[in-house]
Amino acid sequence: MIKLLYWAFVATDLAALCIFAVLGLAAASSSRTSPLIALLLLFVLPAIPLAGSVWGYLRTSSPVWRSVAFALAVAPIVITLASKAYTDARISSNTNAQGDLTFFRAGPQRDLVEAIRRNDAAAD
Image 1: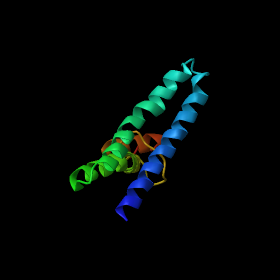
Image 2: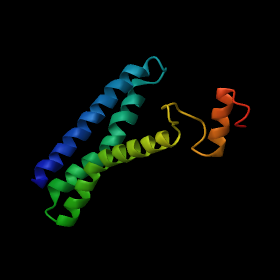
Image 3: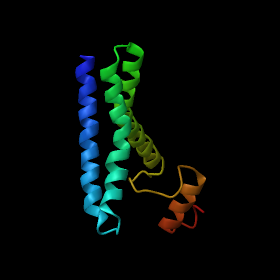
């Protein structure tokens, strides 16, 4: 089961790298970037840890090294999910009751800005 899960993570990482490479190549000409540089930065360099993970997973039967290889394969997904959770938390802390983004977190400064927006001189 773990072996299947590992290869599923590797396939997901590889698919994401391919998507980034294609998008990078598509944007390279409009940004006046060499397609080779875009391919290097968006596919080759990020694929090195993934290739190391696969190499380590296939070359050893040690549970410790296989765990390290598994962690390398899972790391991009964990980082993406943690980043999404952090961003959602930051956005929700800067959202008022109506769902609008505000500059300040909840507190006196946001109350002052909301009062100014409502043109409520008594609340100032």
